[in-house]
Length: 112
Image (cartoon, rainbow, N blue to C red):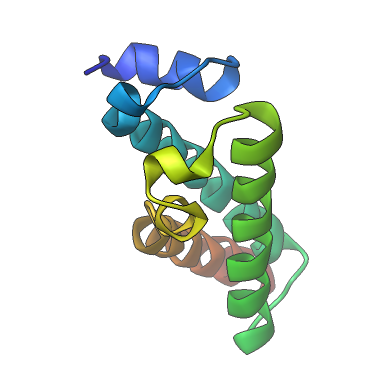
């Protein structure tokens, strides 16, 4: 398994992942989702979006970006990693928690 510093590098560098690298690839997807959640949480707090629209748009937008990332940038065969559903749900709940925390902090700081 790759170290944390290598994992960050793999997020931004195109790499061929094989079936044997499944854990490494899923770690890369996890950290990519964390980056997306961090950015979207700040942006949604500044805009200001709130309520179900903010939550649903985060879920859709982060899933879309993750799908584009894995299919276009990393260019992997989804079936080797359990299918697209398995990959898209990797790290979703923890990234949602990161998003909600940042969204609340930024929104409250700027608009209260």
